[in-house]
Image (tube, rainbow, N blue to C red; front, side, top):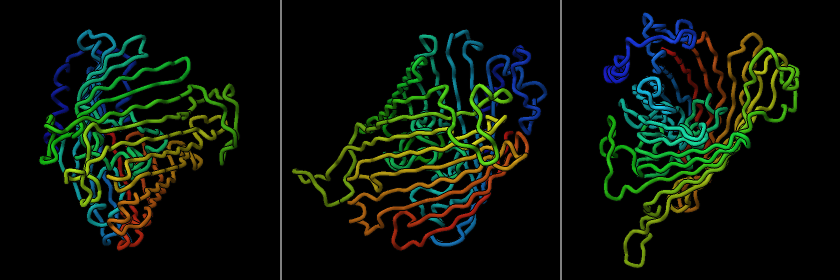
Length: 440
């Protein structure tokens, strides 16, 4: 798996090793990555429109009590991301390409030890394999107001996304489980992408955007979970998602003082760039094919299993709540998300989450991020009846991401899971863990 990961990335590395350098524009890889400049090769690639990134995450997680059983596992996740400016490479105006390749290794804490409906670690996958989740081209029009993307794509890269929730280790702060539970092989979200066509239109003057995507209804191959598979089988159908959002560039000033900093008006923030979060969006998703009713005894007039529409809707909002005097990149922000799913075919008919994160909570630790978040998943009436299940599951996470240097971070986390998987036989679980993250 590791060989495949390196080989896939180095194919593009070799394309333009001898490219010219655009001095002054490249990131400082010497200080921001462990492997550095690669003898100047990274700058040469960047000068020709190719940015190459490698990261690795290693998690040691332990279920201390409750759940399925006590135990500790190690999980690893390595990924490569290649972004290409096709105008620099081939003269294609306002065109970009992106490739994302990743591999997983190690144990399965949630599957074998905890049993949480929403999961406990966002790098845990069903099987250990290496695969592509993105490989697409994007073309922009009308001064970048309109963009069209086509290729292998994961919808959780742009849809149902809040930046403030990205610090958390539990999975529902990426794609929420109301949508993540859907589909024959899941929706096209990490770790498996699907062929897709995405269109996005923005109205910069009003800070509005409208985006929609149409994807293969069954990403990958459910019978072949290892590697990358792109195929259209009879009956796959499609998944469509539409999202309308409001993202003002300059929101209202934060309204209360930070814990160890005084509030200031935006025009007084002269020393640092303001890290501002201000987004509100609603979205809708639907599969074109139908799925079996949760109740195996439910049949139609002809005696065949009853099949129903799988669809849902969601709302999200995030906001910067306060910033520190002379340090507008530091302060408190929060998010809230809520989504629904068809109650007759899904375990959960709605999920909701909210959280807070503080950038620079501890004095002299300006790049650290502390956070706490809660997710509630409500069991559908039919699922409760058929499984004699609890009404809901609640998962809580408290975490602290400490940046040791620009390329290394350590992140301890404490989790509490009430009613794991809504299963009355499972006791509430306590999970602790530590993440090591390296920019290679």
